[in-house]
Length: 416
Image 1 (cartoon, helix red, strand yellow):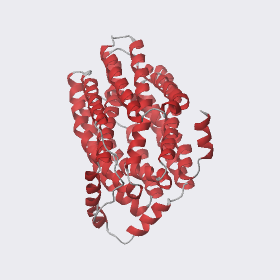
Image 2 (cartoon, one colour):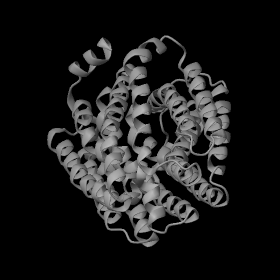
Image 3 (cartoon, rainbow, N blue to C red):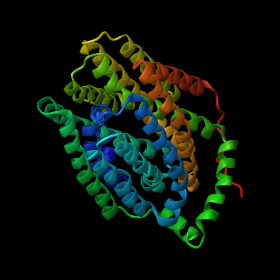
């Protein structure tokens, strides 16, 4: 714990500003997220429509992710973070707040897909200056996860409101709060951050180059990824992990309330258990785990995920204890897997080509997720336990990719 806190005290620059500003996004996101899918159900949206909405949103996001590297290099990390956050998060929050039917949610999902541009710019903003220091990047992402976990402790406030008032009115209010808070986050990050040295270099280098030319240069990035087994495995693992998170976060609330009889207000309290477990890992256990091979720890995290899904599928109706056990085991899996997965991907990318490689990664991940999002919605429409069976299969596939031996190779440079 002392090491982790000492690292934060000595953290400077964009990374520290990003960590400090993160709660302005994380708190509202965690307030509305447990109820988002139920909110859609209350507004008459069906399970298969939710899957369709997710698929369309991810498909459009694939295009924005592909452009993310180009616009980030051409217009700068800071500027893209500002406008991408406002368009991709703040405007959809307003649409969600006033949504009336499926069409509103579909439009919001389409606008929200713009955040994939921000994903590239944000990662570059916080890692560009430390691209040659994998240990520091890992610690930075640990603190990003800590901020996300701490934000969860505000969620019971939403549960109290849902318990007292109707869910639709409460969630509308939470989305309006999200609009204000996320706008503040985008403004603070822009005002107090500085453009990275590599960002300035890329802006200068691409100033007189057209978008078409810049996009055509992606062929060298594809070649870089094709020649790197390490990057291929990192891409496969992250695509599977993002898919499982999307399925669990979307269909957990629907399955537990509509099929297992869990009171809607309870959805606000399970994140506290998850957050407590993750904080224990982040502050106390994580440093000890650093002495163990990361791949073994990640494999243990995947096993925890599979066990958690089994517990949820076997849970009897009207028994919150089984759901609490699921949340506890899943939280252990998150703490073991996600920080190392994020660091593995960040460290697999050549720092000099981070923006463009990250953009191709994000586009490929979304291309993988899009059809599975619709499949998950269709499966839930047939039986609401089926998405979690699909998740267990995806985790098993993740373990297979993790066990495939990959020999370390020297950094590869893109070829024109």
